[in-house]
Image (cartoon, rainbow, N blue to C red):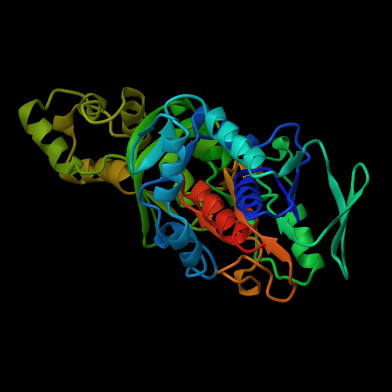
Length: 387
């Protein structure tokens, strides 16, 4: 069998298939395996999440991921990490990171791959795939290879500078599988020029925020950038947002800012608005809020209506992003191979025996925080039990 892609899902599948005595060849055009693992989590790899469950994943068929996630859980992967002696910690919200380098996860997988007897060929591109009586004939950048079964684990379009392409989707289409709309996900959002110019002085300012889109809400950090907005809360909501839609922002969750400003006015009406705001917000943000509202003078000069307007600018800011930074900085690709054409118990194409799709290439996309790695481990493991 051949696995296209030496990332998280491909390596996991190859390891499991090799353990079952299968002859396995893993191909990747990169010069090293597990490159997205290596760069993830700031080089420490957010390798799973303690709370991973089907509700943390987006798909046209939300139930598709249930089987794989139940059969190979976050606890299973954590046990694997612990057996390897890799130290880790919970950063926040169930996110597990290596204490040391993410290379430890890559090395663990490569060691397991070798122990399972699987072979790894790097710097090797697949240029064509054809179905024949014996399975699949692959034309490579150097030579050809025949496989009884083929696992497509070459990821999505995110981070093209690392070699990401839409090749997996092209293969799916070639063999008659449907592909849902794909778009950048877990990606910073951009702002239109006028708003961006107004907010430019805030680049680098971070706040804890509640970001909302329709009924979806995330409470995490948000960051102002030279292009727009980023940070975990924005990356999370980007998977739900669509062009032309509004996003809501509460930049001071848990505080009734209107009442806080009224109290500050009663206690010291001579202080400036930005001074009172600075008690709750970063100084640059407080200054920008005061200036954009045009509320000049002391607190004593501001009516309840004016204070309410200021509070709403902080607590109920609604805006329309102009777009996103695209696949260049997106952590994952939303959408992919249509799950209606795959068997959730095996990851095999229903109409093409011997053809499997695992990981990011499938229309299953996790939240930020280790969920996408868990889908890679779970889907790769699932296919590895049967391929």
